[in-house]
Image (cartoon, rainbow, N blue to C red):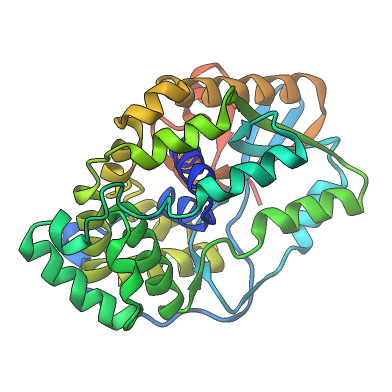
Length: 341
């Protein structure tokens, strides 16, 4: 689960994790269609994707593949989803990581000042000093297009400059990080009195103040992260929009043709390979998150006649994703276009 590693980074820095939610699901288009065209974003009422069906015997779990970003002015038509949730005994939350720091209210107040300046380079260096001249020249072009004259960002670490640029670029393209899909599902479950089951791995931080200090003073090899984000903005915004539209209109074939491999793996590597990440115990966090969701899914399928779950679309479509793993364990997995009407 790539998202969880970004949550750690942004929790320590005091910055909104919206970028974490977007990069975890944003992928480059195939090489034949990477032109950065001004794609038209769908608006109005849209059906969204169909649901994947996971079953064993007469027990069924319906799975919604989530995606980010999505069209900003789309209204998701949830009638069918609401009916299925209303008839379910349980709704399984998506896999996630929860940071746990037992500091209390006053501890948080004392911790807050240490977060100030966490986005800045530890030695006060500017982006121009940190990245190669050709990359900095590309940064200036995209910064002018999407951020403008905010010069304070020039003293941010490359990974944080990348997050700001990405957020501004998708907003300019008419997209939004979440689309409110997860909150909609939670609201529907509460409306019908259906049990919500979390599948989060809790990472305990024994000394959060020290963790923040370590983060602020640690170097990160995040030039490749900035380069990858700029690549995506320069060449793949049209593809990102096309994929968002495909989710909104329920076009599973288009979703299958667009790669779900994240071109910003370098951003994740910059976090996990940094010294502070190893001190926090991030070495096997993906495996732990995976194990918790898989265990919860199998338990739900064993106990409930019908259930509902949310998963990132990557984990739904990938040949080594969660649904593929369930299929390997003997469960029947059917895509929306493989089911009987």
